[in-house]
Amino acid sequence: SIDDVNKAEVNTCTYIKALAINKIKVDIDGEEYVVKLISIKEDKSSYAIIDKVLSENQKLYLEYDSKKKEKDGTLLAYVYINEDKDMDSMLNYYLIKNSHATFEIQSPNIKHNYLMQKK
Image (cartoon, rainbow, N blue to C red; front, side, top):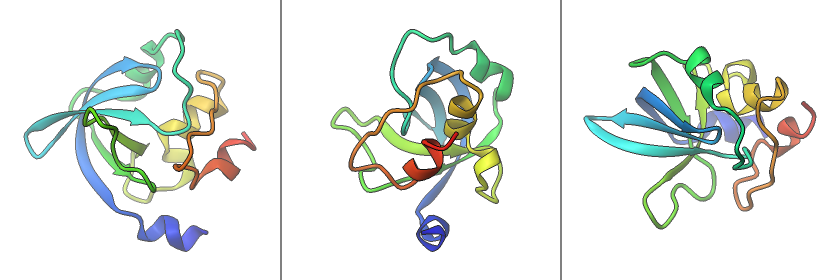
């Protein structure tokens, strides 16, 4: 529900660079992290689009779902470009909606699947 979305744990971070269509590098409180975009299928798509949408040192907001990180420490998140956390500012959704990336169910992180599948 939208209430669950609004109550979700959110981290503020700074964008560093894109690593793949479903991975970006960010800075959280002076430490670098890899963030895997939830619901984005890993493939060989060009990720240059991410650098067109985001700029270096841009402030981003990470919203977590049921599973927050992978065993290797990679964070799993929905990435927003504004504090309001509306769907139009979610990078994951933008990439799927504009056919830059392919939607993939990534259980247990399914909070926004109903919106992603509608694209």
